[in-house]
Image (cartoon, rainbow, N blue to C red):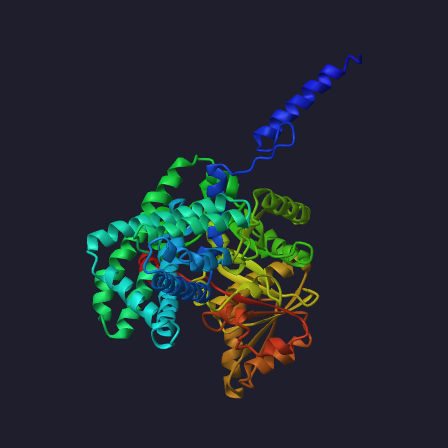
Length: 603
């Protein structure tokens, strides 16, 4: 026998052990058919990213659909109650159907949201205000859907007289139950619903989920428990019949059930399941994400204190403490293959500064509705591919003598993440590309776009690349802060590329020309651009003057005339129509917004 065979067997045995440690079968054909508690928690955390970052409109209409689907549950329950003579088991057989539609269909139900968003909040990945926003919007949608359903049942002739009487009787029985009993029974219902969510994420196939949902929700009517959306629909039904006032129904019936469902789901399931998992639960799901949690101030106050949410995966480390002369340029990109000139442009800007560093961050937008397909290995592959694509940036940076680092962010909300990255890296300047693709496409009106773009954490320079040529630079100026940013850019390009710089100042008439020339000469001297060509236009037409002078230049540096430049760019509502007439590349600058602590916390 070959002497090497024992060694081969030992090596194969070691490989098998290693594979078994990672969760794969060590021998035979047996495949593990259930997730560990850590893995279930990781799946819930990944799915909660989608919910916590969804727009208010999406959440509301998804909640509305779920609320209306609850009407199916109420309809079938009262119909079977009437046709079976009130048999407690037979009348409840179709009660879970509305919940099956909701959970399998992926609609937003308030009692389901006592688990995934709370899991993010417990991990300090989402803030308390973000959680409360999610709850309020979903609950409002559920109640709106329940209201429409109750109207259809009460006034639409859907119920038979017998079923209508059964509906009134069931709803009245709930109204007549004491608040303490309502609360206790609702807490058990909340436990059941949150437990269903947990078990659902532990299931591997739809049939298993269907069985779990059916059996769990069947226990609610059989056990005489209360679900807040069903209770709200019952209450509205009685109000429409004229048998109950809305205020009494909300305070004495719906409110105790709401509190009970919430505490039952959060305390009895979410917190218990949270603490039964290990400290590795988040590290595996988010690549050592435990070190990237929100600060306590951000966790309590959300966006007023900084961030409301940490992205799904962020390989960037927080900025290390450095001296005041450290200058950081952050370059968010969405396609490392096509944004080479943007990265090179940023390196040029950093090359003339002492102790400057360029941080290139690849922002990858994860598709929504991906909660079931999310996998750690899939995300790792994305990270590895991203790092490979960005490997060339280090060679570019070395060519300009600039320090550089890279990172990748995976998130459902790519546009918003560039502001988070800028704050986490303590950026002095963000250099980004403006175009019809990339992060701009992900900017949505239903997100707090104005809040993000009107409270800039640093200076922004947005480059429109039309075959970037820096040989002849035009800098229109009115002496504003944005022009100061562009002056730094012009000086750097002059030093690095030998660019010819022209300064443009527009006055309101020939009588203002002398004043304009004095201003432009002083401004040029103040910004170390005395050798630049100085142009004073006395037509009073700023955009016309820029368009005329741009014909002889290859790059135009424009400044924002007022706050909110990025917001207008994202909405394609830029006031400067001249940019559409330019054939050359141009850059738009907007300075940072200075905010004190009180303003950050309270607006």
